[in-house]
Length: 102
Image (cartoon, rainbow, N blue to C red; front, side, top):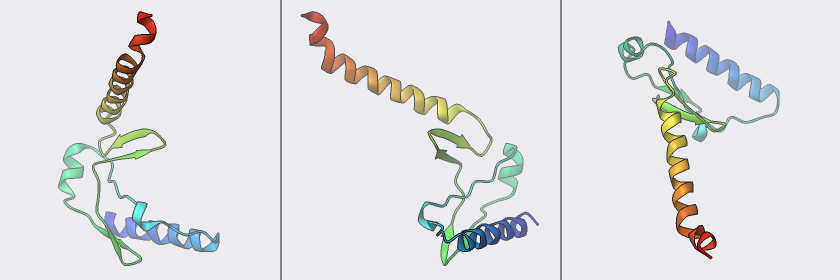
């Protein structure tokens, strides 16, 4: 039933894009099933086909700067933010240190 609903929703999205003279970029399309960990795992590997291209599910995705995972946990997002901060700090420390020493 879930897969049938998912396919129907995808058909609706494709029809909407056609009616509004838009095109769905299938290469950038991602599929993520969101739910409790044991329920998501029990569904197995769900794969969809859109315009001849198979879309495999992902465990996490990034949209508008936010990293979401299938359990709606913020671990990946926080890790990405901390990694950006460390990288920025390292760049600042290695390239701007001479300014403060002058």
